[in-house]
Length: 69
Length: 536
Image 1 (cartoon, each protein chain N blue to C red):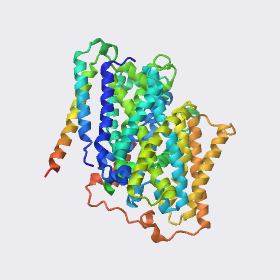
Image 2: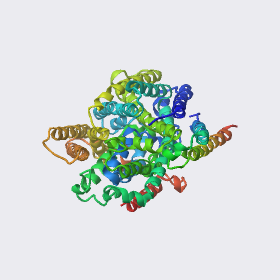
Image 3: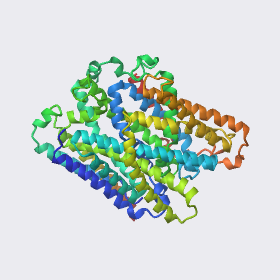
Image 4: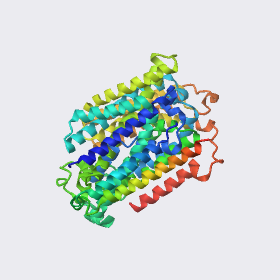
């Protein structure tokens, strides 16, 4: 349909990943003690979302390169 | 629960993307086929994820989490018994007829197989049901955010309804499908940490089992033989025949909301793979919804500590308990995405059935294509406005799940009888479909009245819904068979492509083994059997 859905998914997950990574790095660690059993879940999950976002973006990029003449 | 700036920013980014996808697709909606069926051009993995996501509304996510807290692993039957068999069946056996006959909607198939009156009856009942359902997501979302975050009820209703209306208005079914795929990944990433942190908190699966208030909660099948042994009050017959066969096949095989995703696929193998691809993540969804429900009841056996005395709060309570700011924004976005795409699915199904099966057929036939495209857009706006109104009907029911299953038992359950006979028995006559369907719906209505006015009794509303579905199906099936014997059969040459025995089987020999529907279905059922045994 022209628009490759993997591209917006890749972008939004990359943005979310970066936001969580930064927030996890700068936030007061006591919130992780209080909520997520002492795990800095923002940092780790941000990393996971960033990896997924980059992966989807890469798939979309490869597909667009291939379809060009 | 106290979201910070970062959480609101995450939610805002989601809204920007949802609307952005609508705007990006705006220029591509040139014909009604583009708008209502995505020009039949979408790859199988996208339609597959959308097929599953369209059904992931409020009911699925919050409802099943609440049910897991209330009934335990019994809820797995909705996944490993009900959905799997039906999704494999629709992919292997029914999709060839839907996709191969080039129909644009489920009611249109009924016109080809039966006659005009059967189609009209189904189109009207489906349109009514869709409108009644579309308010559910809106309502649930507004109530939830009012309770959790003190957002005004009207603000969340209007804002989310407006966003859904805009992106469907601009991009039609494609918009809806693309947002469903985005939502699928958001739900996985938004709720998976809940399962991980929850299990860690109770000391792994062994710790979870030990801390459940009732050991039966850790079993899917062990307590099914007698109704009195399980908290839902349903025995093996009601579960297997009512839920596993009638309700689930009625939903997954005939509900245009999900079938429409298959019709948007780019070719026959992609259409057949649509429900099969959907079945794989569906199989693992108990991890995301049932497990947090079980953890919630293990941590809070009286429901008073965390859940405020209401099972419906199980999922939001778990988010509030385990998610720090940041991840909380992702969790809330996932929840919001599921409500919005649940509603969007109903709106796209409604605007298609309204435009093709009611407006073009009965009200204003013979106009040019552009006229119907405009009508589809107007129907979108209409459906969203009515959706806001039906939110207030929902208010009268105390359990969303019961409301939805009640509607399915009314409309989908008899319809499955009509389809089963129509597709697999060539003798079924043109008239019989209408009478069978009508009597099935009337049987459901009669059963509902008898139950509602206390002439018959069931241990729970859910049990009543299962039996209502069974009665509706059986009556529809029998009436269709009886009427068939008193009316003329249709000519066999008219039924090619519509009836199993008269239609050439789709060729799969040119496909690699992992793309063949039959092999995929066997693999899915084998894996699902293993899960059933592990969590017996």
